[in-house]
Image 1 (cartoon, rainbow, N blue to C red):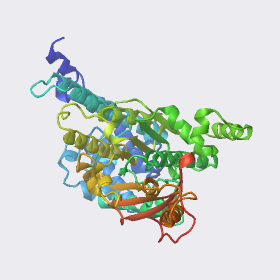
Image 2 (spheres, rainbow, N blue to C red):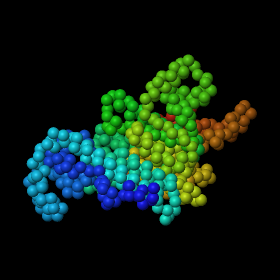
Image 3 (cartoon, rainbow, N blue to C red):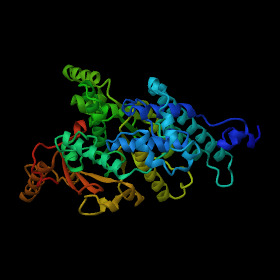
Image 4 (spheres, one colour):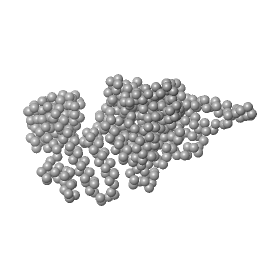
Length: 505
């Protein structure tokens, strides 16, 4: 088949018309539906289909429906009479007979008998038109070799476009008026009030973090960074479990998923296998050390706890993808698929530096990391979910006397800090204090040796099982330290019950 013939198959409405074809539409159904709405405005309130003005094919019908919605928002009645002032000068409406066309819409009340079915058909035809648009762009892009040929990029874009159609966003991302944006902000405030004034986003399951950040917010990119052995993966795993567990528990209580601070969670593990992550979660839930699970040296009582924990988590909405060496494009494709299938509300990536770019920037690691961080932020906005990406820190931390991480320590690219809405550093002073442990004194040791060990031990008791989450950047709030407790044997983070955190490192 010739290239021109192929393009014509997916061309715009003009190209289709040349072949005796038209874009999918039903003007009569639109007119009947609008007539039903103008007779009884409650028709819109009872719709099960998310019908918007851009779903109508006829531009005049789009403007009529948009004006009806605005009048209803002001608690006004939308009728041909109340609409007349807004359409007296509408040139396109004049071609249909002028404002008398509004009255003609209500002359036939048949639309009232099947208003829901009419709305559904209008919506479905709008999706089909958007599919034609996506197909045309796909063919045009595939045939255009005037620039660099990047088939994987075109595939990724096509998948993104198809996901948008599947979600019903036929008009693309439109600008919001301030009223719509303000209503969204008020919903966040209402969620915070309903949670007891503590947080408005998705829960981390850790009260001290929720108090500081107000939870995890949709479209936010959170970078969780730290040096090896600080507990990055453990904290991420805990948050994933806590969010998924909260959703599971709320659903059992009859709470709608949209009203729960929990979230179905997708965990992309590029470093550890799914089995290893599951082992960590089971160990934390059953309060059995991971070492015992790996060795199989369990008592009967411990095995029963493990069995109960496993049964309890059978329905946990936590989905682990341990595919290695993912590109940022492949990760976004998989995330869209999980969103569509399971309506995930939180994404965790462990870890950022193990992702790969598109391939064009591989000769420059800084550019590649920049591409990856931008891709993660774009994913968070596209799916409207929080994304937590774990990140490594440079070795510069180890060369300083003060081991606390700083934003400048983010490895390989300043764009990570730039793209992130929040940057968290996990820090355990206990780890560094254990590294300078002096020899245990014996009977022959000097008084100075005994004193040094006593000082070290006293400080060890102050630091043991303590951790600090350093909120180094937060677009929506203040920065500062968040105290945590860490049980290393079961890789579990918890919040301290005390509210005086002044002595936490």
